[in-house]
Length: 274
Image 1 (cartoon, rainbow, N blue to C red):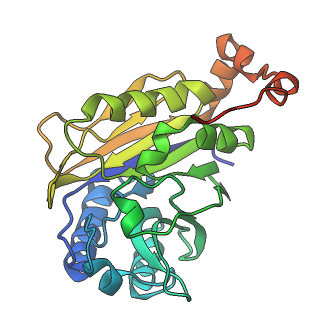
Image 2 (tube, rainbow, N blue to C red):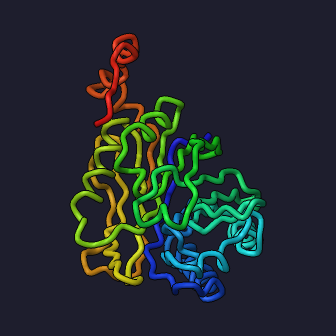
Image 3 (spheres, rainbow, N blue to C red):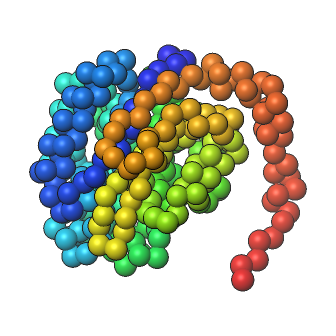
């Protein structure tokens, strides 16, 4: 297993409701990524990048099954470029429920992870069904945990993924203004909380009343920002190396104390909701 590899985040502005245009843009970004960073093994796109962040009846027309035309197209690109590709999309199941989902494709073209967003925002609850299953994927790059956007605000999911061996958390986002600081702080916290890498890829542009600011970033296991998009909110590729040897070094030093979890005590506590 490789203990280090290159990753890239594709900060982009999707076209609302135009899957064809978005897939064409994503293909162009993949070409650019492999030209600029030929050693990249994994490329992460934002939340709902294939449809745009549309919360309207358009979703019902744009949603596809996990193995639908969008997957078939992206699967071919993963094979062509020998690249792990992760992207957000609107998923429709056989019962016509719609989910805010994240697909992870292996360089062989196979689906190796499909995660349905667990923590929906109040706006999203009117259009999406909530997911209920955490997703961990074993790859040649290590064990990867899947999350989406607002999931970052909840320590429990990241902790579950980390306790079950996740070394890297992929988090596509559509995080809007004026909440720049929480976006960065939540991502940083989930990294240092669990001594894992966190890759948070955000949209840019506008959709309805939402303005997405970018600031896509990759955080190290000590919570430090190791790569980030520029402040001007343009489309760009964010590139960094994920070094699992460095993560293990950190875990064996100061951060080893974070493995001393007192589950015997926690289980005795009762959480009362207001």
